[in-house]
Length: 184
Image (cartoon, rainbow, N blue to C red; front, side):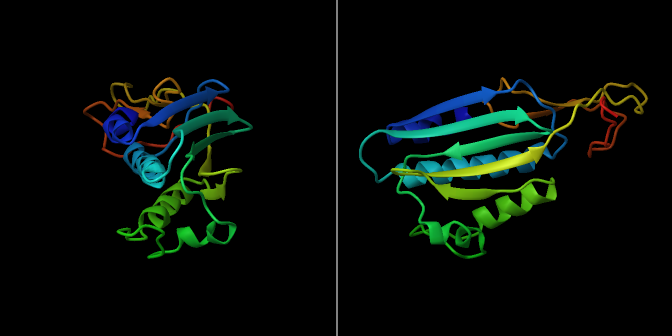
């Protein structure tokens, strides 16, 4: 996903930095939906920095621990007033001239449907951070498909974002089947 945003970030002289801590975690989720959430958060961060002066940086962090994967997207843009921190997640509320006010409410809904939370805070100085802890669990290869080839895993090396790899065999339905935790 970050590769897709590099040209937009470069156009506005915005640096993109990633950090992954705590080693790989496995998350069972809809890959496309989570990509939609984090693409929206990163685009919002870039939009917030377009008109600012000084150093502009978009930072994407992931940290695994305590049964969850904390992912945050931070920018050095115009910032977020404390009274707007919850308001921005309400449908049709926007701080952009051409915004619809639907991106953040949809993003929060997607994260909550996966058992997580999504919130925003203003950074000290300038900018904002959007954070989302998602439940993580150890997964193993699903063996109930006839060929036993289905697997779902978190790849912490891929841009430090929830890049979920699904490798279903032809004999399985499109939706992943929940699998048992190794810890269970």
